[in-house]
Image (cartoon, rainbow, N blue to C red):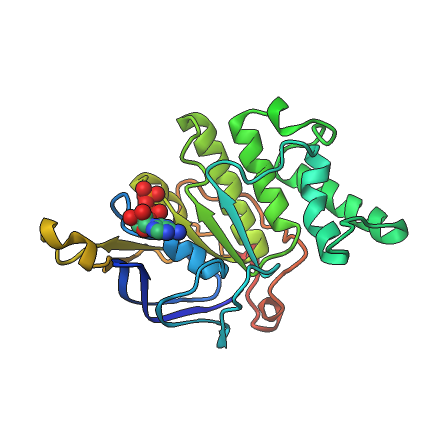
Length: 277
Ligand SMILES: Nc1ncnc2c1ncn2[C@@H]1O[C@H](COP(=O)(O)OP(=O)(O)OP(=O)(O)O)[C@@H](O)[C@H]1O
């Protein structure tokens, strides 16, 4: 639901140039997969989109505004591991964002606000296929279930942009395929803009609307530290994919789109309808 504009971004750590002159416009409701060799700066790039790291040079705009210098509720993130809190139950993990957004220090909700938040959290837990696990702790869940929980935890804040750092990298192939189907459905329902780092090209082609490859163009080993990675390939998936518009061409097309609360308002106005697809 948000456009990201990255303009001539460089990232350096001391003498090391990690990213060199990266420019990229990510359309609203796109699903971009970032691929590239290990250590080329994909996670660093994602952290800049989160607002956790600042570019050394260049600008990042979100919906035309400079990227805030701190993570905020409009940007969610899921990592390969450690996205969820081990000492909180499933319900507690999903509620956490809501609690912090109400009271940074106490992180508690009361009365009707709590009841509404609990209801919303339970709906989301059901949505990601974890119904019945509300009182369990992450250690009692499988890896795939923990990643479903991490998605619910990120989604409760209704982020406009979801950042995924190899979220399914540690999962077995079968579990991964299941969670891919969920991920696609959630993308269509929420119509978020998604940027996902992955090492798995099959995953990139299964999920993304666009694949962007980072690499060091100039690669003289003796000068490696002095060159950063930049975009060397940019592939648009055909037939085009867009959140909210499941494709009839896709062999693994998702079921009907239900919309998770933050439906794109102009969908009805433009006469588009998910039922038509
Ligand atoms: N906070 C930091 N301080 C100093 N150097 C850093 C920092 N974060 C990342 N780097 C360096 O930046 C480079 C890129 O790291 P990054 O984790 O972004 O790569 P990546 O492409 O995501 O790698 P991988 O695919 O292996 O996860 C690495 O050489 C890393 O050591």
